[in-house]
Amino acid sequence: MPTPLLSLKGMTKRYPSVVACNEVSLDIQRGEIHAVLGENGAGKSTLMKMIYGSVQPDAGAIEFLGQTVSISNPKEARRLGINMVFQHFNLFDTLTVAQNVWLGLDQSFDLQTVSQKIIEKASAYGLDIDPQRPVYNLSVGEMQRVEIIRALLSDPKLLILDEPTSVLTPQAVDKLFTVLRQLVLEGCSIVYISHKLHEIRELCHLCTVMRSGRVTGVCDPRQETNQTLSQMMIGAQPVQLIKRDSAPQQIVLQVDQLQLQSEDQFGIDLKDLTFQVRRGEVVGIAGVSGNGQRELLYALSGEDTRSQHASIAIEGQSVGAWGPQQRRRLGLHFVPDERLGRGAVPSMSLAHNLLLTRTDNVHASGWIRWKQLKLHAQRIIDQFQVKAQGPQALAQSLSGGNLQKFIVGREIDAKPNLLIVSQPTWGVDVGAAAQIRSAILQLRDAGCAVLIISEELEELLELSDRMHVMSQGRLSPSMNRADADVQTIGTWMSGLWDQAVEMRA
Image (cartoon, rainbow, N blue to C red; front, side, top):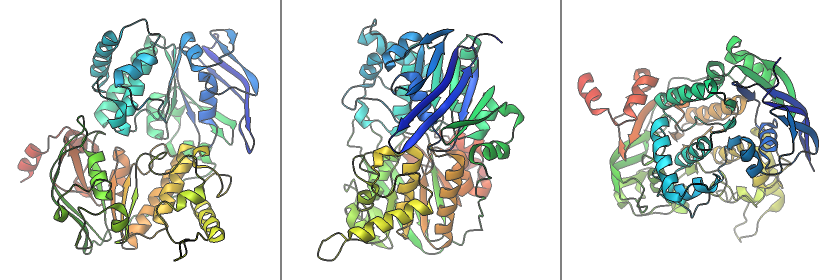
Protein backbone atom coordinates (compact mmCIF):
# COMPACT_ATOMS: atom_id res chain seq x y z
CA MET A 1 0.00 0.00 0.00
CA PRO A 2 1.24 3.54 -0.71
CA THR A 3 2.04 5.82 2.20
CA PRO A 4 -1.22 7.47 3.31
CA LEU A 5 -1.59 11.21 3.08
CA LEU A 6 -2.87 11.19 6.67
CA SER A 7 -2.49 8.43 9.22
CA LEU A 8 -4.02 8.58 12.70
CA LYS A 9 -2.76 6.12 15.30
CA GLY A 10 -4.52 5.54 18.62
CA MET A 11 -6.07 9.03 18.87
CA THR A 12 -7.68 9.51 22.27
CA LYS A 13 -9.41 12.50 23.84
CA ARG A 14 -10.95 12.41 27.31
CA TYR A 15 -13.24 14.93 28.94
CA PRO A 16 -14.34 14.85 32.61
CA SER A 17 -17.59 13.05 31.83
CA VAL A 18 -16.86 11.17 28.60
CA VAL A 19 -14.16 9.66 26.40
CA ALA A 20 -14.93 11.42 23.11
CA CYS A 21 -12.38 9.43 21.07
CA ASN A 22 -10.96 6.12 22.24
CA GLU A 23 -7.83 4.86 20.43
CA VAL A 24 -9.07 5.81 16.97
CA SER A 25 -6.86 4.80 14.04
CA LEU A 26 -7.61 5.92 10.50
CA ASP A 27 -5.80 6.25 7.16
CA ILE A 28 -6.65 8.71 4.39
CA GLN A 29 -5.07 7.97 1.02
CA ARG A 30 -4.03 10.57 -1.53
CA GLY A 31 -6.80 11.47 -3.94
CA GLU A 32 -9.48 9.79 -1.82
CA ILE A 33 -12.89 10.95 -0.61
CA HIS A 34 -13.23 9.30 2.78
CA ALA A 35 -16.49 9.46 4.73
CA VAL A 36 -16.59 9.44 8.52
CA LEU A 37 -20.04 8.31 9.61
CA GLY A 38 -21.57 8.13 13.06
CA GLU A 39 -24.52 9.26 15.11
CA ASN A 40 -24.43 12.54 17.02
CA GLY A 41 -21.93 12.30 19.85
CA ALA A 42 -19.99 9.42 18.24
CA GLY A 43 -16.74 11.42 18.34
CA LYS A 44 -16.49 12.53 14.69
CA SER A 45 -16.19 16.25 15.38
CA THR A 46 -13.65 15.76 18.16
CA LEU A 47 -11.53 13.59 15.86
CA MET A 48 -11.65 16.19 13.09
CA LYS A 49 -10.75 18.98 15.51
CA MET A 50 -7.67 17.02 16.58
CA ILE A 51 -6.60 16.73 12.93
CA TYR A 52 -7.19 20.47 12.47
CA GLY A 53 -5.32 21.43 15.66
CA SER A 54 -8.23 23.08 17.48
CA VAL A 55 -8.28 20.25 20.05
CA GLN A 56 -5.18 18.54 21.42
CA PRO A 57 -5.23 14.73 21.87
CA ASP A 58 -4.45 13.08 25.19
CA ALA A 59 -2.78 10.19 23.37
CA GLY A 60 -2.02 9.04 19.84
CA ALA A 61 0.00 10.21 16.86
CA ILE A 62 -0.65 11.98 13.56
CA GLU A 63 1.40 11.33 10.43
CA PHE A 64 1.01 13.63 7.44
CA LEU A 65 2.82 12.99 4.17
CA GLY A 66 4.71 10.18 5.92
CA GLN A 67 6.06 12.42 8.72
CA THR A 68 4.95 12.50 12.34
CA VAL A 69 3.57 15.96 13.02
CA SER A 70 2.33 17.88 16.01
CA ILE A 71 -0.54 20.17 15.01
CA SER A 72 -0.77 22.70 17.82
CA ASN A 73 -3.35 25.02 16.23
CA PRO A 74 -5.40 25.55 13.03
CA LYS A 75 -2.79 27.91 11.60
CA GLU A 76 -0.24 25.10 11.74
CA ALA A 77 -2.77 22.75 10.11
CA ARG A 78 -3.35 25.20 7.26
CA ARG A 79 0.41 25.60 6.82
CA LEU A 80 0.66 21.83 6.35
CA GLY A 81 -2.18 21.89 3.83
CA ILE A 82 -5.12 20.83 6.01
CA ASN A 83 -8.29 22.91 6.07
CA MET A 84 -11.72 22.34 7.54
CA VAL A 85 -15.26 23.63 7.13
CA PHE A 86 -17.01 23.32 10.49
CA GLN A 87 -20.68 22.61 11.00
CA HIS A 88 -20.70 25.45 13.57
CA PHE A 89 -19.05 28.40 11.92
CA ASN A 90 -15.89 30.25 12.95
CA LEU A 91 -16.71 33.74 11.70
CA PHE A 92 -16.47 37.21 13.25
CA ASP A 93 -19.93 38.77 13.10
CA THR A 94 -18.76 42.38 12.90
CA LEU A 95 -16.38 41.80 9.97
CA THR A 96 -17.24 41.50 6.30
CA VAL A 97 -17.12 38.28 4.30
CA ALA A 98 -13.85 39.38 2.66
CA GLN A 99 -12.25 40.25 6.01
CA ASN A 100 -13.23 36.86 7.47
CA VAL A 101 -11.82 35.02 4.47
CA TRP A 102 -8.65 37.12 4.52
CA LEU A 103 -8.04 36.19 8.18
CA GLY A 104 -8.16 32.50 7.22
CA LEU A 105 -5.50 32.88 4.51
CA ASP A 106 -1.77 33.52 4.79
CA GLN A 107 -2.43 37.25 4.24
CA SER A 108 -0.01 37.47 1.32
CA PHE A 109 -2.92 39.02 -0.64
CA ASP A 110 -4.46 42.41 0.01
CA LEU A 111 -8.14 42.71 0.84
CA GLN A 112 -9.16 43.85 -2.63
CA THR A 113 -7.48 40.83 -4.23
CA VAL A 114 -9.18 38.51 -1.73
CA SER A 115 -12.56 40.07 -2.57
CA GLN A 116 -12.01 39.36 -6.26
CA LYS A 117 -10.93 35.79 -5.53
CA ILE A 118 -14.08 35.27 -3.47
CA ILE A 119 -16.25 36.44 -6.37
CA GLU A 120 -14.43 34.14 -8.81
CA LYS A 121 -14.53 31.10 -6.53
CA ALA A 122 -18.15 31.70 -5.55
CA SER A 123 -19.19 31.94 -9.18
CA ALA A 124 -17.30 28.78 -10.14
CA TYR A 125 -18.84 26.75 -7.31
CA GLY A 126 -22.36 28.15 -7.42
CA LEU A 127 -21.96 29.60 -3.92
CA ASP A 128 -22.59 33.27 -4.70
CA ILE A 129 -21.91 35.71 -1.87
CA ASP A 130 -21.16 39.43 -1.69
CA PRO A 131 -17.65 39.85 -0.19
CA GLN A 132 -18.58 43.26 1.25
CA ARG A 133 -21.49 42.02 3.36
CA PRO A 134 -20.98 41.96 7.13
CA VAL A 135 -21.35 38.47 8.55
CA TYR A 136 -23.86 39.45 11.23
CA ASN A 137 -26.62 39.83 8.64
CA LEU A 138 -25.93 36.61 6.73
CA SER A 139 -28.28 33.66 7.00
CA VAL A 140 -26.96 30.37 8.35
CA GLY A 141 -26.74 29.01 4.81
CA GLU A 142 -24.79 32.01 3.58
CA MET A 143 -22.35 31.66 6.48
CA GLN A 144 -21.68 28.11 5.39
CA ARG A 145 -20.92 29.33 1.87
CA VAL A 146 -18.31 31.70 3.32
CA GLU A 147 -16.65 28.84 5.22
CA ILE A 148 -16.51 26.62 2.13
CA ILE A 149 -15.07 29.38 -0.06
CA ARG A 150 -12.49 30.31 2.58
CA ALA A 151 -11.30 26.71 2.80
CA LEU A 152 -11.09 26.26 -0.95
CA LEU A 153 -9.05 29.46 -1.41
CA SER A 154 -6.23 27.94 0.64
CA ASP A 155 -5.69 25.17 -1.99
CA PRO A 156 -5.64 22.41 0.65
CA LYS A 157 -4.02 18.99 0.32
CA LEU A 158 -6.62 17.64 2.77
CA LEU A 159 -10.06 19.22 3.02
CA ILE A 160 -12.42 18.28 5.84
CA LEU A 161 -16.08 19.03 5.11
CA ASP A 162 -18.70 18.79 7.87
CA GLU A 163 -22.27 18.69 6.49
CA PRO A 164 -21.35 20.80 3.42
CA THR A 165 -24.54 20.34 1.38
CA SER A 166 -27.23 21.10 3.93
CA VAL A 167 -28.05 24.48 2.36
CA LEU A 168 -27.60 23.72 -1.34
CA THR A 169 -30.16 23.03 -4.04
CA PRO A 170 -29.97 19.63 -5.77
CA GLN A 171 -28.40 21.32 -8.79
CA ALA A 172 -25.79 23.04 -6.60
CA VAL A 173 -25.03 19.73 -4.84
CA ASP A 174 -24.37 18.13 -8.21
CA LYS A 175 -22.06 21.02 -9.09
CA LEU A 176 -20.23 20.78 -5.77
CA PHE A 177 -19.74 17.03 -6.25
CA THR A 178 -18.26 17.71 -9.69
CA VAL A 179 -15.82 20.19 -8.12
CA LEU A 180 -14.89 17.77 -5.31
CA ARG A 181 -14.20 15.00 -7.80
CA GLN A 182 -12.02 17.39 -9.79
CA LEU A 183 -10.10 18.31 -6.61
CA VAL A 184 -9.50 14.61 -6.01
CA LEU A 185 -8.20 14.15 -9.57
CA GLU A 186 -5.77 17.01 -8.87
CA GLY A 187 -4.47 15.17 -5.78
CA CYS A 188 -6.50 16.67 -2.94
CA SER A 189 -7.97 14.27 -0.38
CA ILE A 190 -11.32 14.92 1.26
CA VAL A 191 -12.77 13.84 4.58
CA TYR A 192 -16.53 14.02 4.17
CA ILE A 193 -18.89 14.09 7.15
CA SER A 194 -22.57 13.90 6.33
CA HIS A 195 -25.71 12.30 7.65
CA LYS A 196 -27.07 12.07 4.09
CA LEU A 197 -26.36 8.43 3.39
CA HIS A 198 -27.18 8.67 -0.30
CA GLU A 199 -24.48 11.36 -0.66
CA ILE A 200 -21.87 9.16 1.00
CA ARG A 201 -22.80 6.24 -1.25
CA GLU A 202 -22.65 8.41 -4.35
CA LEU A 203 -19.49 10.38 -3.61
CA CYS A 204 -17.14 8.55 -1.27
CA HIS A 205 -14.57 5.82 -1.93
CA LEU A 206 -14.32 4.56 1.64
CA CYS A 207 -16.29 5.00 4.85
CA THR A 208 -15.14 4.72 8.45
CA VAL A 209 -17.96 4.20 10.94
CA MET A 210 -17.70 5.43 14.54
CA ARG A 211 -19.86 4.66 17.55
CA SER A 212 -19.32 5.88 21.14
CA GLY A 213 -15.82 7.18 20.37
CA ARG A 214 -14.52 4.02 18.68
CA VAL A 215 -14.13 2.85 15.10
CA THR A 216 -16.65 0.05 14.58
CA GLY A 217 -16.13 -0.66 10.91
CA VAL A 218 -14.71 0.36 7.53
CA CYS A 219 -16.55 -0.26 4.28
CA ASP A 220 -16.90 0.74 0.64
CA PRO A 221 -20.15 2.77 0.79
CA ARG A 222 -20.74 2.18 -2.91
CA GLN A 223 -21.38 -1.46 -2.06
CA GLU A 224 -23.78 -0.66 0.80
CA THR A 225 -27.40 0.43 1.08
CA ASN A 226 -28.86 3.15 3.29
CA GLN A 227 -30.20 0.40 5.53
CA THR A 228 -26.85 -1.37 5.99
CA LEU A 229 -25.05 1.92 6.64
CA SER A 230 -27.70 2.84 9.23
CA GLN A 231 -27.26 -0.56 10.87
CA MET A 232 -23.48 -0.05 11.09
CA MET A 233 -23.87 3.47 12.46
CA ILE A 234 -26.55 3.13 15.14
CA GLY A 235 -26.67 -0.64 15.61
CA ALA A 236 -30.30 -0.78 14.50
CA GLN A 237 -32.63 0.37 11.79
CA PRO A 238 -33.95 3.94 12.25
CA VAL A 239 -37.55 4.51 13.22
CA GLN A 240 -39.78 3.97 10.21
CA LEU A 241 -41.99 6.93 9.48
CA ILE A 242 -45.68 6.13 9.52
CA LYS A 243 -47.38 8.86 7.54
CA ARG A 244 -51.14 8.77 7.27
CA ASP A 245 -53.12 10.86 4.83
CA SER A 246 -53.66 14.32 6.26
CA ALA A 247 -57.08 15.54 7.28
CA PRO A 248 -56.72 19.33 7.27
CA GLN A 249 -59.27 21.17 9.35
CA GLN A 250 -59.70 24.84 10.22
CA ILE A 251 -57.02 27.43 9.42
CA VAL A 252 -54.58 28.08 12.27
CA LEU A 253 -52.06 30.34 10.51
CA GLN A 254 -53.18 32.81 7.86
CA VAL A 255 -50.64 35.05 6.13
CA ASP A 256 -52.31 37.56 3.83
CA GLN A 257 -50.38 39.86 1.49
CA LEU A 258 -47.44 40.15 3.88
CA GLN A 259 -45.04 42.80 2.65
CA LEU A 260 -42.06 43.75 4.74
CA GLN A 261 -38.92 45.68 3.95
CA SER A 262 -35.83 44.05 5.40
CA GLU A 263 -34.10 46.07 8.13
CA ASP A 264 -30.83 44.72 6.78
CA GLN A 265 -29.39 46.52 3.75
CA PHE A 266 -28.30 43.11 2.42
CA GLY A 267 -31.50 41.35 3.39
CA ILE A 268 -34.47 40.34 1.24
CA ASP A 269 -37.77 42.22 1.24
CA LEU A 270 -40.89 40.09 1.62
CA LYS A 271 -43.17 40.63 -1.36
CA ASP A 272 -46.90 40.04 -1.05
CA LEU A 273 -46.74 36.64 0.70
CA THR A 274 -50.04 34.82 1.08
CA PHE A 275 -50.44 31.29 2.43
CA GLN A 276 -52.18 29.32 5.15
CA VAL A 277 -51.55 26.35 7.41
CA ARG A 278 -54.45 24.26 8.68
CA ARG A 279 -54.83 22.11 11.73
CA GLY A 280 -53.71 18.55 10.94
CA GLU A 281 -51.32 19.31 8.07
CA VAL A 282 -47.63 19.95 7.44
CA VAL A 283 -46.80 22.75 5.02
CA GLY A 284 -43.20 22.91 3.81
CA ILE A 285 -41.34 25.93 2.44
CA ALA A 286 -38.28 25.09 0.32
CA GLY A 287 -35.63 27.43 -1.01
CA VAL A 288 -31.95 28.25 -1.03
CA SER A 289 -30.92 29.98 2.18
CA GLY A 290 -30.93 33.77 1.96
CA ASN A 291 -34.08 34.23 -0.11
CA GLY A 292 -36.22 35.78 2.61
CA GLN A 293 -36.64 32.81 4.94
CA ARG A 294 -35.03 34.63 7.85
CA GLU A 295 -37.24 37.70 7.38
CA LEU A 296 -40.33 35.47 7.19
CA LEU A 297 -39.35 33.57 10.33
CA TYR A 298 -38.83 36.77 12.30
CA ALA A 299 -42.19 38.11 11.14
CA LEU A 300 -44.04 34.89 12.04
CA SER A 301 -42.35 34.39 15.42
CA GLY A 302 -42.93 37.97 16.58
CA GLU A 303 -39.26 38.93 16.66
CA ASP A 304 -40.14 41.49 13.97
CA THR A 305 -43.39 43.30 14.77
CA ARG A 306 -43.41 45.77 11.87
CA SER A 307 -45.92 43.78 9.81
CA GLN A 308 -49.40 45.09 9.13
CA HIS A 309 -51.40 43.80 12.08
CA ALA A 310 -53.93 41.97 9.87
CA SER A 311 -51.31 40.40 7.58
CA ILE A 312 -50.62 37.56 10.07
CA ALA A 313 -53.39 35.79 11.97
CA ILE A 314 -53.23 32.86 14.41
CA GLU A 315 -56.48 31.10 15.28
CA GLY A 316 -58.34 33.96 13.63
CA GLN A 317 -56.62 36.59 15.78
CA SER A 318 -54.57 39.28 14.02
CA VAL A 319 -51.06 39.22 15.49
CA GLY A 320 -48.85 41.10 13.03
CA ALA A 321 -47.85 43.71 15.62
CA TRP A 322 -47.68 41.28 18.57
CA GLY A 323 -44.48 40.02 20.17
CA PRO A 324 -43.45 36.37 20.75
CA GLN A 325 -44.98 36.03 24.22
CA GLN A 326 -48.43 37.19 23.07
CA ARG A 327 -48.33 34.81 20.12
CA ARG A 328 -47.21 31.96 22.37
CA ARG A 329 -50.42 32.38 24.37
CA LEU A 330 -52.31 31.47 21.19
CA GLY A 331 -50.33 28.22 20.97
CA LEU A 332 -47.42 29.18 18.68
CA HIS A 333 -44.12 27.47 19.35
CA PHE A 334 -41.03 28.03 17.28
CA VAL A 335 -37.70 26.29 16.53
CA PRO A 336 -35.11 28.65 14.96
CA ASP A 337 -32.29 27.50 12.71
CA GLU A 338 -29.59 29.01 14.95
CA ARG A 339 -29.23 26.53 17.80
CA LEU A 340 -26.68 28.37 19.90
CA GLY A 341 -27.58 31.97 20.64
CA ARG A 342 -31.18 31.91 19.44
CA GLY A 343 -32.59 28.47 20.19
CA ALA A 344 -30.55 28.10 23.37
CA VAL A 345 -28.28 30.20 25.57
CA PRO A 346 -24.87 28.46 25.37
CA SER A 347 -23.79 29.14 28.96
CA MET A 348 -27.09 28.09 30.53
CA SER A 349 -28.08 24.58 31.56
CA LEU A 350 -30.69 22.60 29.66
CA ALA A 351 -33.08 23.06 32.58
CA HIS A 352 -32.64 26.84 32.48
CA ASN A 353 -33.02 26.81 28.68
CA LEU A 354 -36.36 25.11 29.15
CA LEU A 355 -37.56 28.33 30.80
CA LEU A 356 -36.93 30.33 27.61
CA THR A 357 -40.21 29.23 26.06
CA ARG A 358 -41.99 27.34 28.82
CA THR A 359 -43.56 28.61 32.03
CA ASP A 360 -45.00 25.28 33.23
CA ASN A 361 -42.56 25.21 36.14
CA VAL A 362 -42.95 28.81 37.26
CA HIS A 363 -45.31 29.48 40.18
CA ALA A 364 -47.92 32.22 39.77
CA SER A 365 -45.92 34.28 42.27
CA GLY A 366 -42.87 34.12 40.00
CA TRP A 367 -40.86 31.50 41.91
CA ILE A 368 -39.28 28.71 39.88
CA ARG A 369 -40.18 25.17 40.91
CA TRP A 370 -36.64 23.81 40.61
CA LYS A 371 -37.41 20.17 41.31
CA GLN A 372 -40.21 20.04 38.74
CA LEU A 373 -38.07 21.98 36.25
CA LYS A 374 -35.22 19.47 36.44
CA LEU A 375 -37.61 16.52 36.17
CA HIS A 376 -39.27 18.16 33.17
CA ALA A 377 -35.92 18.70 31.42
CA GLN A 378 -34.90 15.11 32.19
CA ARG A 379 -38.15 13.83 30.69
CA ILE A 380 -37.37 15.62 27.41
CA ILE A 381 -33.78 14.31 27.49
CA ASP A 382 -35.07 10.75 27.92
CA GLN A 383 -37.92 10.99 25.41
CA PHE A 384 -35.74 12.40 22.63
CA GLN A 385 -32.65 10.36 23.58
CA VAL A 386 -30.46 13.42 24.07
CA LYS A 387 -26.87 12.54 24.98
CA ALA A 388 -26.18 14.93 27.85
CA GLN A 389 -24.99 14.80 31.43
CA GLY A 390 -28.44 15.49 32.81
CA PRO A 391 -30.54 18.68 33.12
CA GLN A 392 -27.59 20.62 34.54
CA ALA A 393 -25.47 20.14 31.39
CA LEU A 394 -24.68 23.42 29.64
CA ALA A 395 -26.19 23.84 26.20
CA GLN A 396 -22.75 24.52 24.72
CA SER A 397 -21.46 21.16 25.98
CA LEU A 398 -23.79 19.19 23.69
CA SER A 399 -23.05 18.19 20.13
CA GLY A 400 -25.04 20.10 17.53
CA GLY A 401 -27.36 17.19 16.85
CA ASN A 402 -28.08 16.51 20.50
CA LEU A 403 -28.81 20.17 21.20
CA GLN A 404 -31.16 20.18 18.21
CA LYS A 405 -33.01 17.18 19.65
CA PHE A 406 -33.46 18.98 22.96
CA ILE A 407 -34.71 22.23 21.38
CA VAL A 408 -37.16 20.44 19.08
CA GLY A 409 -38.26 18.24 21.98
CA ARG A 410 -38.80 21.29 24.18
CA GLU A 411 -41.23 22.82 21.69
CA ILE A 412 -43.02 19.60 20.74
CA ASP A 413 -43.45 18.77 24.42
CA ALA A 414 -45.46 22.01 24.78
CA LYS A 415 -48.22 20.45 22.61
CA PRO A 416 -48.57 23.58 20.44
CA ASN A 417 -51.50 24.52 18.22
CA LEU A 418 -49.01 25.86 15.67
CA LEU A 419 -45.39 24.69 15.36
CA ILE A 420 -42.98 26.56 13.10
CA VAL A 421 -39.67 24.75 12.61
CA SER A 422 -36.65 25.96 10.68
CA GLN A 423 -34.14 23.29 9.59
CA PRO A 424 -35.53 20.60 11.94
CA THR A 425 -32.79 18.02 11.34
CA TRP A 426 -29.80 20.03 10.14
CA GLY A 427 -26.66 18.17 11.21
CA VAL A 428 -28.66 15.45 12.96
CA ASP A 429 -27.81 11.78 12.41
CA VAL A 430 -30.14 9.45 10.57
CA GLY A 431 -31.55 7.85 13.70
CA ALA A 432 -32.23 11.15 15.46
CA ALA A 433 -33.61 12.69 12.26
CA ALA A 434 -36.10 9.85 11.93
CA GLN A 435 -37.11 10.35 15.55
CA ILE A 436 -37.66 14.11 15.12
CA ARG A 437 -39.60 13.62 11.90
CA SER A 438 -41.77 10.95 13.50
CA ALA A 439 -42.53 13.28 16.43
CA ILE A 440 -43.53 16.05 13.99
CA LEU A 441 -45.92 13.73 12.16
CA GLN A 442 -47.41 12.53 15.45
CA LEU A 443 -47.99 16.17 16.37
CA ARG A 444 -49.70 16.74 13.02
CA ASP A 445 -51.89 13.67 13.51
CA ALA A 446 -52.89 15.05 16.93
CA GLY A 447 -54.27 18.15 15.20
CA CYS A 448 -51.34 20.59 15.29
CA ALA A 449 -50.67 22.88 12.33
CA VAL A 450 -47.01 22.55 11.31
CA LEU A 451 -44.93 24.85 9.10
CA ILE A 452 -41.43 23.63 8.17
CA ILE A 453 -38.84 25.83 6.49
CA SER A 454 -35.90 23.78 5.28
CA GLU A 455 -33.24 23.47 2.61
CA GLU A 456 -33.43 19.68 2.99
CA LEU A 457 -35.61 18.78 0.01
CA GLU A 458 -35.83 15.10 0.83
CA GLU A 459 -37.00 15.99 4.32
CA LEU A 460 -39.69 18.31 2.99
CA LEU A 461 -40.85 15.71 0.48
CA GLU A 462 -41.04 13.15 3.26
CA LEU A 463 -42.96 15.30 5.76
CA SER A 464 -45.03 17.83 3.83
CA ASP A 465 -48.64 17.55 2.76
CA ARG A 466 -48.29 20.73 0.71
CA MET A 467 -45.23 22.73 -0.33
CA HIS A 468 -44.24 26.24 -1.37
CA VAL A 469 -40.90 27.48 -2.69
CA MET A 470 -39.35 30.79 -1.65
CA SER A 471 -37.15 32.81 -4.00
CA GLN A 472 -36.07 36.47 -3.73
CA GLY A 473 -38.72 37.23 -1.12
CA ARG A 474 -41.54 35.76 -3.21
CA LEU A 475 -43.55 32.63 -2.49
CA SER A 476 -44.64 30.13 -5.11
CA PRO A 477 -48.17 28.79 -5.32
CA SER A 478 -49.00 25.78 -3.17
CA MET A 479 -48.10 22.37 -4.60
CA ASN A 480 -49.53 19.11 -3.30
CA ARG A 481 -46.89 16.62 -2.23
CA ALA A 482 -48.10 14.14 -4.85
CA ASP A 483 -47.21 16.66 -7.58
CA ALA A 484 -43.78 17.58 -6.18
CA ASP A 485 -40.40 16.14 -7.13
CA VAL A 486 -36.78 17.15 -6.59
CA GLN A 487 -36.28 18.44 -10.14
CA THR A 488 -39.38 20.65 -10.12
CA ILE A 489 -38.66 22.08 -6.68
CA GLY A 490 -35.03 22.69 -7.67
CA THR A 491 -36.18 24.65 -10.72
CA TRP A 492 -38.67 26.66 -8.70
CA MET A 493 -35.86 27.61 -6.29
CA SER A 494 -34.62 29.90 -9.06
CA GLY A 495 -37.99 31.63 -9.08
CA LEU A 496 -39.08 29.93 -12.31
CA TRP A 497 -42.55 28.85 -11.28
CA ASP A 498 -44.76 31.31 -13.15
CA GLN A 499 -44.29 29.63 -16.52
CA ALA A 500 -44.74 26.15 -15.03
CA VAL A 501 -47.98 27.22 -13.33
CA GLU A 502 -49.29 28.70 -16.58
CA MET A 503 -48.52 25.45 -18.44
CA ARG A 504 -50.31 23.38 -15.77
CA ALA A 505 -53.31 25.73 -15.99
